[in-house]
Image (cartoon, rainbow, N blue to C red; front, side, top):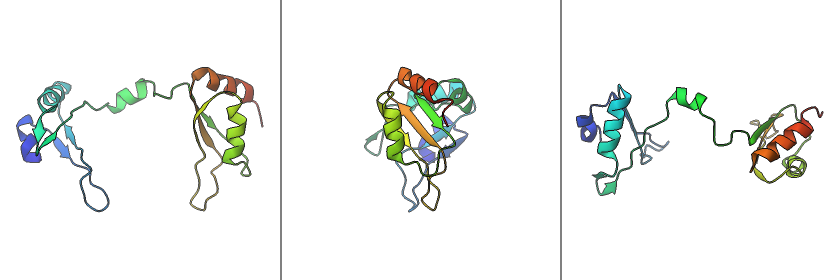
Length: 139
């Protein structure tokens, strides 16, 4: 693949592999300038390689990730200082009273106990705001 993309003059080519060494079916080309990357995207997108149609997209830079709001912006809450006796069902019952839950995650330690915090993502921003306003001073 590096030879195939050599005419585009990438600075680096990365082809991620799984733990067993098999390729994951995608790769990354790194260029010196955004203009080079855009030209390469235009040249690669919809091209064919080994009977596979390629898709090319410009990756977000680290700077862009911090300045652009995430898709869950305003809908995701971090709940800290949870009692270790609290369960996923307890949290689901509590937060469901404020609106439809999109996701609820209770990270666990290696020993299976939860870590004392949770992530709650609501389907709508107003629901998240209601929950935050109602519970921000709760203990």
